[in-house]
Image 1 (cartoon, one colour):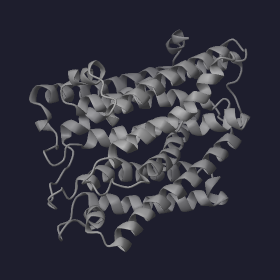
Image 2: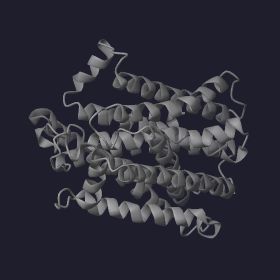
Image 3: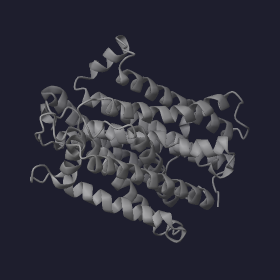
Image 4: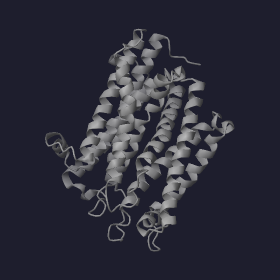
Length: 390
């Protein structure tokens, strides 16, 4: 099926070339980091995790969100997602690859990854995180390719693949739960030391991931005419609305715990995120307040059918939802965890231009993978006669 990539329009190949240019720029920035070390980043002794780990955390959620299509389709026999599901599985492949690359660039020297493989430490959460991510990548490749191959030949998928489909559902929950354990198991970081961290991660994943999938499918429809189905889209927006409501609720639980308990260690990170520390504002403050406004606005728009089903308004609602969750989980989670430090002092962290360029390169590579896989899926559906789903 790989030969399907060769049947593209000039626009498709221009898009791939543009992504290749961004990847090249990110590779050049990574060479600078390899030569000069992590000193070219904004990381320090007090802030050992930064922009790379923030993107890793967010993208694990994007990868796990494919379960929001798999679970209704195979557990509740909701057939409207049947032709939508391959897009989610292929998006998950791109997201997991990006997750792994962000871990590699965060380690400094890439050969350090071999330490996890050559010297496995089962008592390390990082070891298990690597295992579940690798397993989830293989599951999505297997399930996605086998089901698409079956659709290509217009036959039912083989019975043995159902076991791996069911396994992928439970595996999707595990990858983000284990990632949450990386945070909530660290003593001295009060912003992360909460039992609902895994719940917060899953809730944000199950609203942001499907939102990104819907946005990308809208772009796909504009350029290819592929229609995922109005009823499927409306069902997925309902799922996003519920997940976003739970996500906001979990965040408010943290606010209540911090301020009602009166424990300074729980209050200081929230102070730092929203108003600075000891009267000194931080660059993150404006971002966090913007995230609050966008989160509430997107939830209110999705909560009511009149706005949720408005096809012209929906893309803008989904965009602000993605931005809100990315700021909260991709920036605020890391800055809040390390600010203030264990000595109640501030070490200001901001991503450097090298970090941003490397991150853009990784995102471009992920988009390239998803673009190629979706191109294959679309061509197969055209040949199988399942392309137009109006």
